[in-house]
Amino acid sequence: MARQIRTDQDAIEWLAENHPGIAICETGRGQFTSEIRECRRCGGSGIFHWISMGRRVAGGCFGCGGRNTEKLIHTRVLKRARQLRNNETARLRKEKKSRDRVAANTASANALFEDSGLLRFDAFIAKAYPSEEAADGAREGRDRHALNILQDLDRKAQTWGSISENQIALYSKLANQITDAIESGEASAEAKVATPEGRHEITGKIISIKHSDGEWGITCRMTIKVETDAGIWIGNGTLPRKVYGQFDGDTENLVGRTITLTATIERSDRDDAFGFLKRPGKAMLATEGGAGCSSPQLKSAPGSAPEGTRR
Ligand SMILES: [Zn+2]
Image 1 (tube, rainbow, N blue to C red):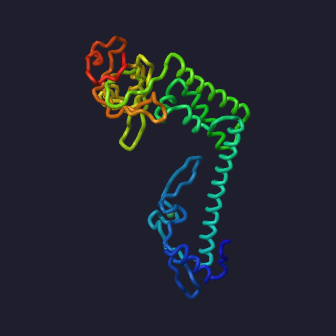
Image 2 (image 1 turned 90 degrees about the vertical axis):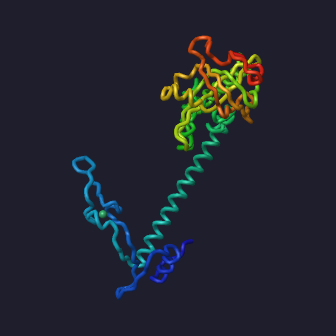
């Protein structure tokens, strides 16, 4: 329980403890705080906004003339201490209320999904795809609409703590469709095979391109499908600079093209058939539509091609 602030002495003690920066001055009329505070009318910006004829207009603040945006203000210690403490109590109460609401909605949404035998969106993605890169690729591929709907429904459930029976049914249907497609894709025509490891020359088809804005500017990653006699594996890595340069700004045109490059392959811990392509080099696109007589994979590169790699 918060301490009572009844007297000037209580106020001075509370201020010293909680706001040691605030000076106190003694006058003939009692004790006052002495603070430099921003103009209350403009918040210290010197500019005041108002609505005139339905439009938002701005002008010099009348309170401070736009010049003296900070003022020395004296307030009775008792009044000021109570003011500050009430503000803090209100802020803490509001924060707790918002935390409680998020926790309650999460619990209620989790229970709803669990009762319906469903995974929340993030858990579904983590289970369905072998890596974040694979999930990102899927979000730009065939299942992108379904995935967007799933995510939207999950967000609604998080915001409201619940969604309707129809929405749950839709979520379940789409999630099953995606998992079925992934499983049948794995089982049928495209049997998967473990990625090679180490540095190799590889040739694959670009199945998606993803841009992301990061610390080092825009980076562009590609996901490629490599076919071998035993099955396919998926590689993901930075789009080689040389290729990026050729298609700057229009990299969507790259999807479907065949690329050959040398890269160090690091197999994913979560999926043997998924590899990260590190330090890509010697990249070359096959001539569009043709057999690509200029493609370097025709050249023999002893010891550099992974076993079983074919075009
Ligand atoms: Zn002002």
